[in-house]
Amino acid sequence: MSKERTNPVAVVSILREFGYCEDALIKAAFLHDVVEDTKITLPDILQIFGEEVELIVSEVTKKDDWYEGATRKIKKEHERLAIYTASRNGQLLKLADSIHNTVSLLKDYETTSYADRSFAATKTLQMHYMILYFTEKEKLYKAMTKIDNEEPMLIYAKTIIEGLL
Image 1: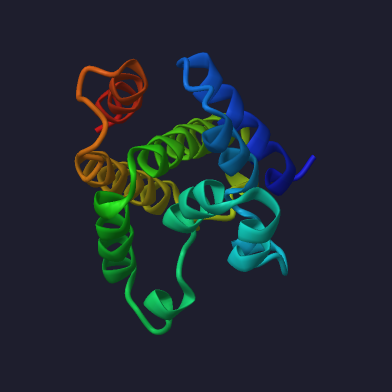
Image 2: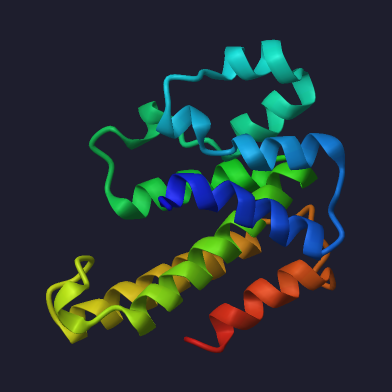
């Protein structure tokens, strides 16, 4: 099954596991990648699911105009600014998505043979990529100002990153 199909289900599972079951948040979690991955638009989500769900989805959706010609560093700065200004539910959704993506990346790294790893050509480059990825996540978590530092989901996410840096 493709990442596009399993990611939303995994993100919903993470949110529920940590006790976040609010209806709008769960709906947004199922929909969080559709604007980026399909022809569905934010106005479509607004019309079908309402303002609250559309707001949460919009807060975690990459904006094309931010990324045209931008370096990775600039893209990540825009992502952090968007999350810093996002609602608490937007930050919770981004955090759960980040946890799933990080755990998936680690599983892929551990289970895929060296020859099959397409994200880097050598072991050294793979490690540099992983360190860059985890450093970016660490900065992203610091931008999540509406999530209390003592919340278990944020502690869990930080523990994954800190154990690898």
